[in-house]
Length: 78
Image (cartoon, rainbow, N blue to C red; front, top):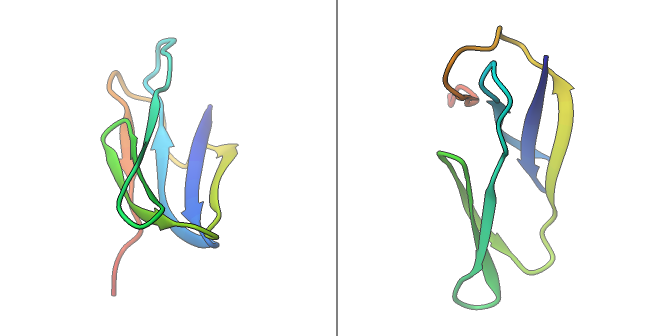
């Protein structure tokens, strides 16, 4: 199963694992203050993205099995 890894400027933010059944994935981007962008990827609120930053989405093999509900895997903060 495929999953979507999300990062900003090379900093890993999380992995979205879609549900086991077919589903359309929505990403909402909207303008914020001072030429920034706010993004909501399903239930994963991404931090503000400023002009010049690079937001990356990469398809990877899912590190977990698919479930009936979508899953968000976040990095462990030290």
